Length: 370
Image 1 (cartoon, rainbow, N blue to C red):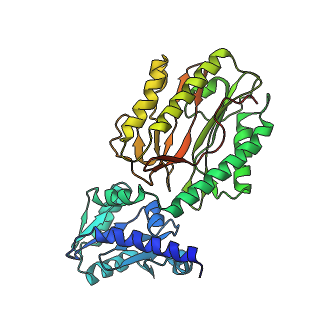
Image 2 (cartoon, helix red, strand yellow):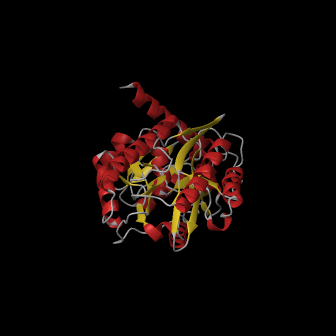
Image 3 (cartoon, rainbow, N blue to C red):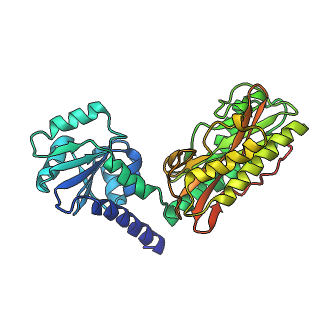
């Protein structure tokens, strides 16, 4: 077995033990993880139906027959149970470990699912705990990325950049936004992506004033900006990047707006390091744009965390109280959006370090005329 595989096995073991150590030392408390994303984080096994039952002593991944064989081959930090009747199996585990308090994920469990769970475990002496404690415990773990996670995101970013660079060869007057989105997704998958991080934003002209504009039949024209907010998915982890290009030519006004956004982004990036509050990054970017007279045209937050989800903690906003720490992965993406005219956004995905940041994006940011 390779050293890399051994390292990954150890990292998965540590993830599970860390969560288990946060449970009550009495041993009467267990966590029931139902979120597909959190199960993948803890076990590195993607599936849509399983649940993870974690005690201080042991962890169990409960799956049906569709996932049984694959889970038994891949999961190394939990015992895999292939159940016939899910709730019977769950109750057996609750009684085996004499669990009294069962933590559930308030963010992923519906009211209907909670009521069903409560009715099924009623025959035991256990109660479902409906606070957000379990959500917070897992979020606190996920917010700091391991070296393995960062390398997956770095690869996702490389795929994104390679695909976008190739796509730029066909960006010219007459090409449709929807064509750009289709071709870009094809290129990403061809280069190794398992999918796209989100519905790709490939918009042009006046639509670039819409931060989340949807690609359609609008055609690129000479003198337009074209905005690409794009990302690839690699082994479950996302990338996220935005670049804005001009086609044919750019007016002095377009250049002024572009340069203002770029200055805001570079100034905010220079502010990033461990120990800085997330809202300080937002404030730094926002102040540059405000001083230029465009504060009313930057309405979204400056960034967000990225990982197994495209938007996760920490959120880099005016209310972002999180103290940045080494290993957090965030975006820095200021923009100016002039309704009916055009918009500019520049976004990088970065890893927070003790003395600054490791920028996973490598594509140039000065204004490029295609």
